[in-house]
Image (cartoon, rainbow, N blue to C red; front, side, top):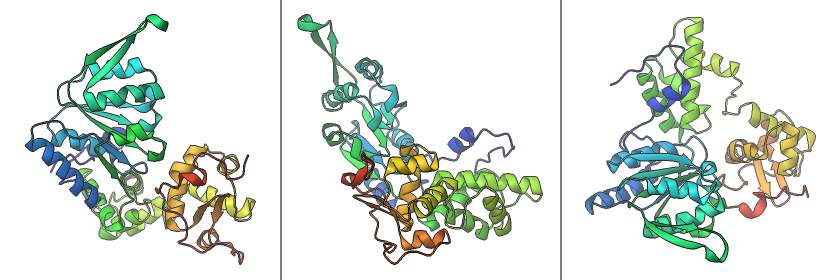
Length: 357
């Protein structure tokens, strides 16, 4: 097993990249997605062609970028990486697509943020492996079709509902990644600890796994923070006491809520009487961007049953009131009644303010 150099000045991005699994076998958790994706890739290998285009959706930190790299590795193909915000013009897409090698995997992170003109160019490229380059303007403009090499597009998104239908339909396989189970996260913590040459006990790994919001990226980040605390205060190992002390220092509570999560929950309970409150009003109250609340804090609060999304806005449940140490009113909704964190409940208020108009 390769052991990473555990020096304190390791760059987090380098360490995080080195901790990523490189094969589907090494990838822990998401068994349903792994089995489905393995079948898609095996079919592509047997017919010696490119794989179906793949859309990976789900919350941040669950392994979408890692799976994209695994797809390229399993297909024995190079991977080109870009992001939706970088593809703002049709010419940007044409330049990327025309430079692809045969069978190459093109990974577009945050694909829902790609400009509309760029998305329309992707429609034809994904189906027919060609792009239409428009030369000139006005009535004299002509479209020149350019053939491109067959490729596999892997798109990652935290907001699948924002993808236009024509683009979403062109992905042959869509994988939805869910939050991880604690047992899987403990396995991930032990694996990462081995790569970082950190001695971690079962109790220590369980404490980290229970506070990482069901997210491997956060589990690895907390492991590095706990490791740093152990190195500073002596010992260097990660046991239950060291894990609890470090996580309390970094304001991660027993269920994994961090400062932003608690700020959102406390704002709804204390400032707005439990809600309902619209997204933009809530964002102003806690001093964060609406997108941060919607994609980072809210899904985990809903999953824990602390928060509900309604047609009028966000509402704190009985469990949410209790978690912040307040007595819930009699009309507070019970826990466990919120919508699923990544369900397509976009009709509620993905884009409205739940009464903030």
